[in-house]
Image (cartoon, rainbow, N blue to C red; front, side, top):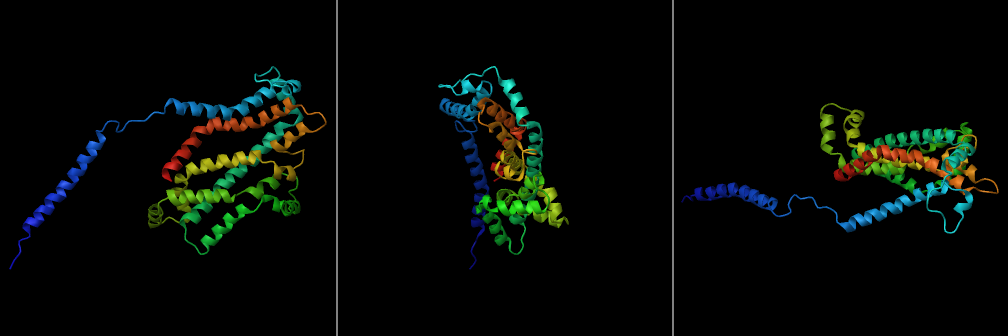
Length: 309
């Protein structure tokens, strides 16, 4: 007895052709719905909240300008002044001269630039190794790196100071630079990004083409890792520029960074708060200029990293 399966095959064939057609029709109907594909604009409440947040964020900078442009008597008034005064250039000149900010800014630029570049390079290299390379003890080594984040840096001040003195780097910029050439936070940050954003297929394709690990890192990993590298560079640069604790211990007043140099403005029995605020404003201007110049690239890097992650 023979069973005729031709009608069944015909029905399956017709169903296979009808299913994509019905799927396409559903997509078309969704696209033609009211509001489909439109951009939703923020309402007045959202703009109001953003405006309030912007004012709260900018007010400290505005108050610094106001305090730096007045004199010490007006700063101490109740209520304090809220409009800029006529002494801004005068106070800036006094702060620049008394704190020797020219040399201090050069030192801070060298220290922050070298630390930021080194941290980005080594963190990206280590992050790639922890994220995509397979080697014995990888997880244990990663735990050790993360564990260093839990150790207070104050515990290593005395042995680190003695080590710098034994190397002959006491009171010099290398004593500030070398202990912070790489950070565990940067390694963990880059590892998390590359683990999600870097497909294993790209690495395998590179190996099939005969590329070794360093070639893969240079040609494949670095182009993908540019967004988080830009963010990490900016964060590290700002942190190194504003660091006070270790530079204050490792350097003297003849070779200071900006935060250390600003302490000279508060020395003595009488402290001119307007000059101190002028010095703080001068120390902040390079960071503000960097954000103005590279702000779009940094925000774009954050957004691109969020999309890829």
